[in-house]
Amino acid sequence: MQLITVLISTKTYHEESLTLRDDDYAGDPLGERSHVLPWSLATLTSPVDVDHYLTSLVDDRIEDVTNQLTDYISA
Image (tube, rainbow, N blue to C red; front, top):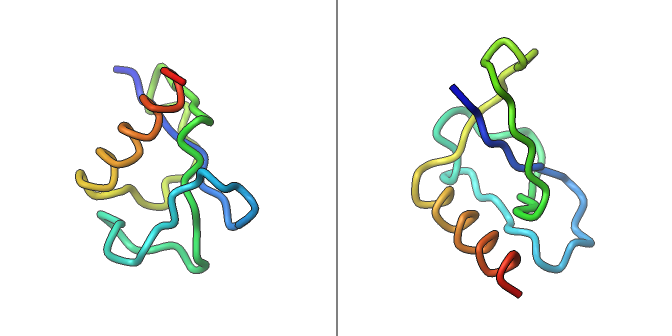
């Protein structure tokens, strides 16, 4: 199993970040307005590498992140 993650930040100065809304979360939303930085990926080779799980995104928002990442890579 391999997990692919993206960085989520509360900082707003990243022009290409995707702002998350409460309904973008598959689980509980985070406490502060957050933004996905699709160009900042990390892969984990095992669920054991996850120390603390907060939430995840709904499929539609994951697709948005994937599309923006693809645009970023192909630029």
